[in-house]
Length: 240
Image (tube, rainbow, N blue to C red; front, side):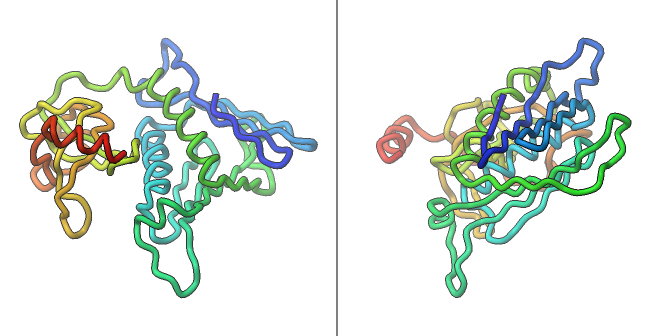
């Protein structure tokens, strides 16, 4: 259970095992906030798998310096919203390399509900910094992997590779693999970013999709160029 302690407040948002009769496209979660005056807990089966996965990707991208300005993500069904804040300093332009080194903040705004599911007055906000975001992400993603990603398609019309820039895992920028040969944990060459810079990236996950659930239009999405060679991988590991 990914639990964060912040100045007397204990916060957790964990993934629970799916019930046998549960919808495989919905994720069962438990949200809890406890401190000297609050003891709140909510178990929900209203978070979609795609929302849960997007949440993990956004956290990973914040840590990887992908955001140059504030970005908001609303998850209405479990009852919270998240704002991602990259490091900023007035008068200075931030490149991705610096954003990866500096602090960043994730603000979680929780909408408390009563037992009938009605919203209560007020919003409780928690601020997580880089180290706390990383710890929370690792725990939440491990639970999501354990209980839900096993149901992903083993076969399909298209194989997509979800990749991250070197040194980071979990960003899942999706690329079509026309060879259907990519595997999780490999390194491949892609064109990344607005300038289509060719670079080696890490494959977070290789997953099959069909026309009705592909993350992007297969006819327009960027493609994996080729796998990295063993020599290229050795050089990368020496640098990491």
